[in-house]
Amino acid sequence: MYSLSGKRVWVAGHRGMVGSAIVRRLASEGCEVLTASRGDADLRNQAETTAWIEKNRPDAVFLAAAKVGGILANDTYPADFLYDNLMIEANIIHGAHKAGVEKLMFLGSSCIYPKFAPQPITEDALLTGPLEPTNAWYAIAKIAGIKLCDAYRKQHGADFISGMPTNLYGPGDNFDLNSSHVMPALIRKAHEAKCAGAPSIAVWGTGTPRREFLHVDDCADACIHLMKNHSAPGHVNIGSGEDVTILELTQMVCDAVGFTGAIEHDLTKPDGTPRKLMSADRLRTMGWAPRIDLRDGIAAVYRWFLDNKA
Image (cartoon, helix red, strand yellow):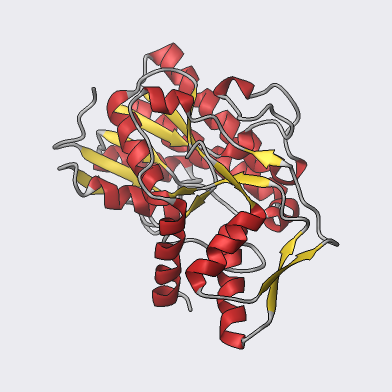
């Protein structure tokens, strides 16, 4: 077991939804949390990143920093998504090794898996088939991060591990209808429909595809659990182990928001992959399970949206 108590812990990417959740969770671990703003170091720049690590000497690192975006952004800026993410992870992982960091956790994404992976998706499905083309650039960078951690473990004995979160939601999410994921987009659409007195809201396709969701605070708790209790090559899925249809999700959101209109289907829009659920078995055997019920989580995020965005 690795103790975080009394340690200097760097959360790279502390301003993002996942990074900020990890910072909140670390408040109860008795450690000193380190953060680096963009003015402190451009993480895409090796010299600046290495210098910051050497100066601040973290004992442990959560690598949650990344360039992220939706399908449109990935398709429009493929070079940026591949290059920036490769540089960020390579600079931090190599810098952590050079500085003698005791432990590092790299955070990836469920998009690393093949588009048509068997469901639920187990960790060994990695690299068994072609990726989803719409976010392949980001996925390739994240796969490289996993393998880089494994390589430093194999060659140098570094205690570097990887966790792969499922679809996350929570405070700090992106509610822009042009670039957000399905959960925050539905929350904003339902809220605006309620405020406008609209008779209905539309969801893409048939509403039958199934998706998995995990509250970001549960994700942060799982990351701490893995950092303290796990040390092995490869990666561990971080998910709820349960999924819902898009239609069921939409109804939950409408209930939380208080929108009582109809739910209509825009059949001109695609359904996407029929199902995307990651196996949570490996993480469960390590003694961790989520605590935040999906309905309760959606209600809490809507309250956050009202306080911060609406």
